[in-house]
Length: 222
Image (cartoon, rainbow, N blue to C red; front, top):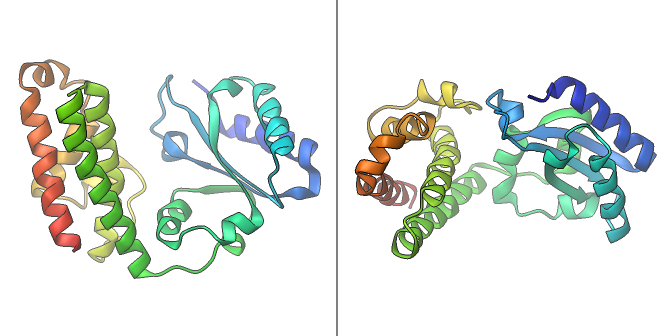
């Protein structure tokens, strides 16, 4: 598996070599930041430049491909002005889930508050609910259901903050804050692989568990 500390050091140097003073911020998100990465995990990096043109994206792509296992790298890239104009409801979780390696992210973000966090949670719950209904009708695929439980993990992070709890970055941290139906949903996500035989035997149980929970979440956030 990738040694993320060394990889990020190489990534930072590569970005500075290619873009120089145009680099405003570099960071890491995703499973590698949370310490939950597996051999299959992508490397979710964050890069903010003074501006991003198509030619910059080409150079960025080439720089990533020049790094060891660079084919796993992707994530978020933006220019300064686009970052300042970003929808505020997305910024709280974006900020919390980003570990800085170069520069100061806060200086590149507009302000946001509790109502923005609540809006993010409501949009997330509505999107998840729609995706579950659509996925069950169209495919009932395991990949679709797994992605939905993963989305519920991110939604639970926000819901805990809105309940006055600290932001839990990892699955383990989040599990200590939850109980009842919330914890059942997170446990499915955490133990997804070990539940494979049970999911195959009674798939509707796992669809119903998440669909019912998501409906309650929407009502709570309304």
